Length: 202
Length: 202
DNA sequence: ACCTGAACACCGTTCAAGT
DNA sequence: ACCTGAACACCGTTCAAGT
Image (cartoon, rainbow over all chains, first blue to last red; front, side, top):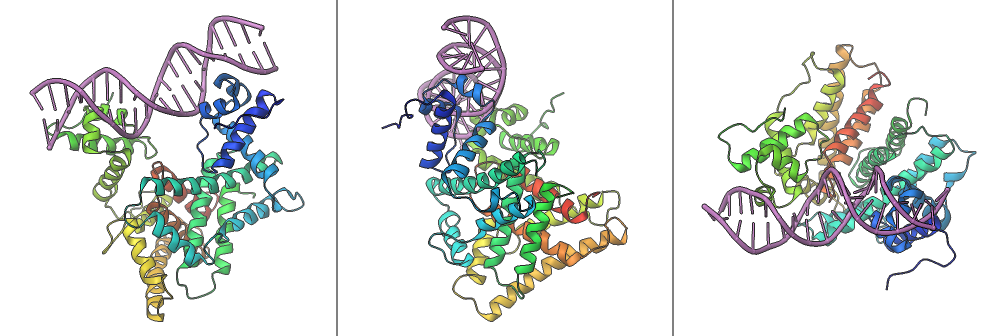
């Protein structure tokens, strides 16, 4: 039942294949050392040799998944300022997908499934996985921009966590009644948040 | 060196005291079963008896910290840095009030009244008024701090709008399922947001 | 350099056994 | 009911030892 790594791959590539395939099975998967090493059919020591921390492994796996396996937006277009690309990337996460056509529908669904009436452990886990995947996409955007030197080193998980909070705030704000156009204040919030994260110079 | 629980407390209260004191030492503390149990001087089994999961323990500890130990409105206390007072002020807006006892209940009510099924104009106006009042409180905090010269001149409405978005994000985050303690990331988000608004020097 | 697998120092949760 | 502490099934990281 367990999928096995393609033949002819070196250890490092088997590890990346294993991690990517686990994210493919479940984008919110936890990626523990032992689980990835087992699927890659290498030892935990070998995994640690190629990827000194879990962060390093996760970052490398996300590059494989998002840059190599999934279509890219403007993220890699070096002619656009890093700040704008990050904002584009975040904005793309705000677009409702799946069953929901509007922010109202989207959040009503989310609350129905994951908030109302003491949701089951399965339901909770499902939401946690969804959020983790979004977080990872944001982290990945940071890694890409960092590789260009366009974004300073720093705690990308922390940055992603903050930006996730701002995105939730904006998205819920879209669902709530408002007197005037939100377009300007949403844009403004995204810019302020991204500047807070990228540092003074932007 | 290790602080010891006050005498005369029952196990449950010793556990809460231990958890609260650890959060007092470091709001980002991890609160592991063993660490809390050790400071409380009870067994892990006893801790689990009173608080069946880490979530339950953390939630109970947060109630102690925020509702019981920190009821002070610090806005006018010039001995506290402006930045900290603004954060305190924002945090006070996050505490559920009225009919709702939890963020879950609060947001379910809000969505029921102001989002589901094309709300009436009256309902919409009601929400707009609530949000305006919250915005005003945030703006007011800016004004108070500006009068002291502790906050630079600037567009307070814009600042309040951004902080409102972040507060909504944090509050909805509190209602949604999460795997780990949100305490640290919430704190972090508040700090990042306030720094973004107050400018580089803080 | 690359790899192994044990060891270390942690987690949260469960549970038989005591009082 | 309350409490104990061992046991279980996990973590991520380190490291001596092999090739």
